Image 1 (cartoon, each protein chain N blue to C red):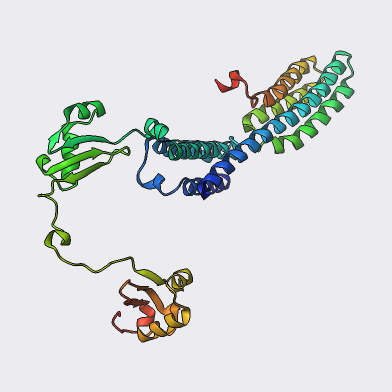
Image 2 (image 1 turned 60 degrees about the horizontal axis):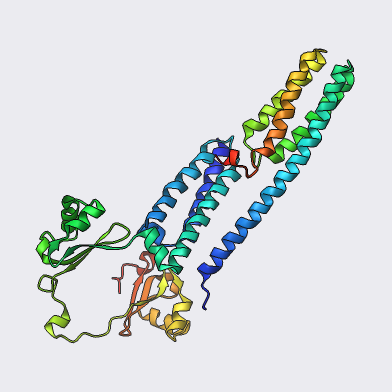
Amino acid sequence: MRRYMSDFVFYGLWILTGLGFAGVYWIIGAQESVAHALTAELEAAERAIAAGEWSRAADVVDGVIGRWRRIEKRWALHTQHEQLEAVAEALLEAETLIGLHDAQALTPLRLARERLLTLPRRDRLLLENLL
Amino acid sequence: MIIVFIRVLILYTTVLFFLRILGKRQVSTLQPYELVTIILLADVAAIPMAGTGTPLVNGLVGLFALLVASYTVSFITMKSTKLRAAISGRPTIIIANGRIIEDAMKELRYTINDLLEQLRVMGWPNVQDVEFGVLETNGQLSVVPKSQKRPVNPEDLGLETKYEGLPTPLVVDGQVDVQNLRRIGLDEQWLRSELARFGARRPGDVLYAALDTQGRLFCQLKAEAQNGAPPA
């Protein structure tokens, strides 16, 4: 059977779609591992606050903010910018409260953790996301 | 501001490119699924165009999804006549032998006023002059007039006519169409000598030159090359 250019375009489009799906899953996987690593550090900061080790908590949060600023630029290519800003906001609020030795810093830290974990979950092929 | 400007340029280029892939039919006669594509393309492109908080990739992926969907539907309709009928519908005869088919009109929710308007636009104000009226799948009305009412053609008068093919453009806006020249078995040397007869020193002086199937060369020089000479 003779093949036409339009046949090749059709197959090409579906191959690209398949590659795109694979790429999205790879990105989600990478995002999840980064989010887990950052949340583990934020948990360490929470434990430090609970133990009254304010300088250690400040160091950990500073480190997380530095990493987040680098990550944020890459994630901005495919994630809603306001969702990224929400994480940055919570981290900065936590940093300020830790500087004041205020135990309320735990609240923005937990918020930042939750927001970080939610980001890759929003792109997963789940019924809740579809509907 | 600059971001919005660049985003619009990127999305414009992408939509234009995708429409080219979808083909010429897309912009002339729209089937229902093609109309859906056009409407959604504009909407999907508009969101990331103005909202700089939305990643551009999201908009491009949306456009790509529409391209894949539309191309797939057109691919399917090419391969399967049953699916073609299901997706695009079938042409419906609404006038037969000069009489309106009421049932078909009601089925299509097509009013008499719509029909008369279309007929008038096409130059057939009398329904009884129409042998067949067919509402095509893209919503256009095709009319086959009664043989007594259609324009007279040479065959009706028993006149012999010469073959009239398409003229072959050889120079367009100063550019020689080498492919066309080769196709009709001629070369650039022949073209240059012929153009010289019209006062063109080089093909760059020519606005348009074409050879018809009778072997007659038409040549019009560019205004600056004419120097007051009348067009050939």
